[in-house]
Image (cartoon, rainbow, N blue to C red; front, side):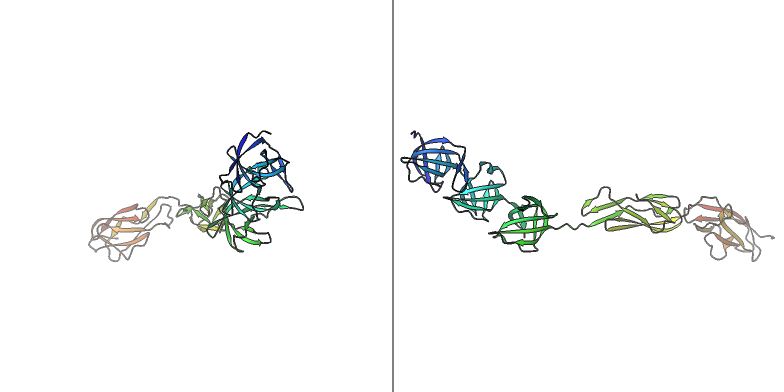
Length: 412
């Protein structure tokens, strides 16, 4: 027998100083069969009978911490199988574990073994993540076996907690995974975490409501949670219409729509007119002025609406305006002359009014108050004699017309 490697026996604590012994070390990357299951092997040691080496004992071999998983005793020597151990915290207590399969170190579903008791509901810290022991608790000799799954953070009442979050569940009848109801998740936590029915949790920045609780699982609680859809405040605003529109004109409505605080690109807006005989609107919000009058165009987005009002007038035809009346005003007692403004085709002016003035009130005066488009004049006295100017000024655009009038003191 070749006992040419010095190792240290650390006992039941990997942090012990330990005592040194000589062993023969061989690589052994095979499964080690125990009573109830197998463990991934790592090395096999041959050594003389050593009472301090037993199942679960920690050894330091070539600066690695290993754990004895199986011993075969012969008359004068021992065949010892050891596996790699991993540092872990279980319920905030530092421990060491062995993975049943070395590949378990790299997946989210891990089967572990420990020479200390494992319990369903244990919360562990490993690789900077939280893990929950969910089942398969069994014991073979010195070792307990359990299965743990990676947890994800959830928030309840402002406190960060950890649980297994699933959007699908395993069906033992169909032997496969089935999706959970749309917009629902199943959250499994240990029973030390109290989350009441109808309370809210936050997962991935989304809010969920606890709809059902299953506490029949040993040391664990399963929560069925339903997504709380955010309440959107829809808004729609429209560009500003013209103060006055004219028949035959068009106007393009430009809507701005929001879902909450987000502007919607190419929103689907429905347009209607309260009177299509006055103004019509197409599906794109283009308004066509049909006839004079007042009309509302309604725009609807989701469950909100906005209204645009139009005052439509007939098209104004620009025709020449003239002043009507005589350029002679006689001084005969009681003589009154009529003056007015109109279009040159004698049609009345309806959309304008005028201010009338006389430049020399010593020759002529108004009879009464001038109306918007007409007035009456008479001479100041029966002896008035001379020329004066009568002016009519538009109250709309400031344009004016005038007439030179001769005030005469003789005959009619």
